[in-house]
Amino acid sequence: MSDAFQNCALTWKERLNWRVMRAVNESPLFKRFSVFQNDLFQRRFVRLSEGNNRYTEGFEHLPQGQSFILAANHRTLFDFYVVAERIWPRFPEPPELCCPVKASFWYETLSGLLLNLTVCGGAMYPPIFRKDDHRALNRQSVDCMVQALRRNDRTILAIHPEGKRNQNGDPYELLPPKPGIGHIALRSHAPIVPCFVAGLKDSYPKVLRNALNPHADPIRVFIGAPVDYSDLCCESDDPKLRSAAAHQIAERVMQAIAAQGERDRAFMNERQKGSRF
Image 1 (cartoon, rainbow, N blue to C red):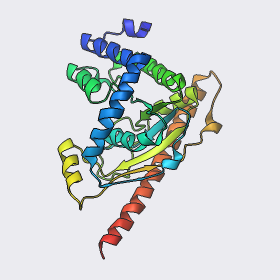
Image 2 (cartoon, helix red, strand yellow; image 1 turned 180 degrees about the horizontal axis):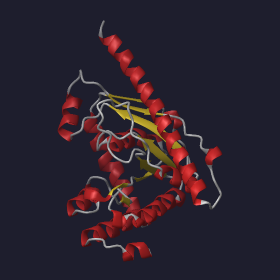
Image 3 (cartoon, one colour; image 1 turned 135 degrees about the vertical axis):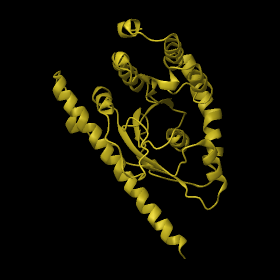
Image 4 (cartoon, rainbow, N blue to C red; image 1 turned 45 degrees about the vertical axis):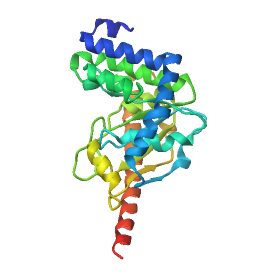
């Protein structure tokens, strides 16, 4: 563990959760089991929960043979479950999923540890801390994400650039992005694939009811071409220049996600027109 980890006043639950999840995600043996668990159980469970009321566009934009960052809007707790289930079969072998997550609940409670291990295959890693006295640990979390992207060519780093769930009434009105995705991109040079998810309900019982309702709106996933940020790659050690580049990358990613949202809006408008006849 880093000096920041050792010196930070973590609770015993936070230390336990981080140690266990780090072992699961950074040990080749445990990570293989995690991938097997997600492939055999979680993916099929999500597929059954969705039902047949679903629509996806943009599979052709998924990079093959290299790790990448998947950036999506954030409306519900289930966004990346659905996206992962849709794209999983498009790879020759199951990818390794890495989903940075807010430390609250997932790393501050024992129930978060249990759910992470049993429902998510340990993929909710690394933690992002919001407490002021824990923020130094977020630099270590960024290191973990960059290392995951570099470790092999099968990692999908799933990130919500908005940083938190967007509960605005208009699903197409996105929150301002956090610059973290830009910092990760500058260090890893990994492709960033924008994605827009819509039609999901905010609780699991509602998701099930939606799956059983043939007249409900479909759960939609729109995937866009990788975001070009090559002109923003900055080799300078000047922190101000790198910070400015990271913010610009994050803004560019959000614009790409918003463009996928407009594809979804057009799709729903056409669907509603068709239902009038």
